[in-house]
Image (cartoon, rainbow, N blue to C red; front, side, top):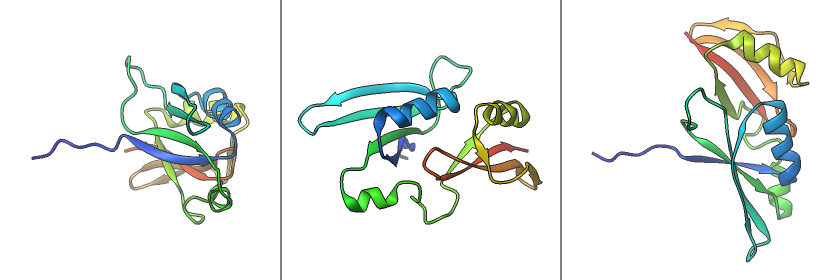
Length: 135
């Protein structure tokens, strides 16, 4: 039986440094790696939500700068308007209040669903995320 996991999800961004600043300073993510790729004039930038353990767990995000007109049209709308990513937390209200204090825009008030507490928020480009505390 194979042992597989989802390691990285690509997020198309307009600017590496702008995206790093938002995700690290506003959402409290960890900058896992930022390596120049000189042969391509690109960077390998990986971020991840902070955890209480020494290492991040779960999938990480690869910030990929848009280089073509087609890629630039995907910035902020990677899923055609659907919720793109789900940020799971162990304390919804703690993170909700901290995010609001950091200027994160929530599209709705927190709501209770059969699967947990959830609210939709936007990243710096307008991609929608769920902040989610499962039941």
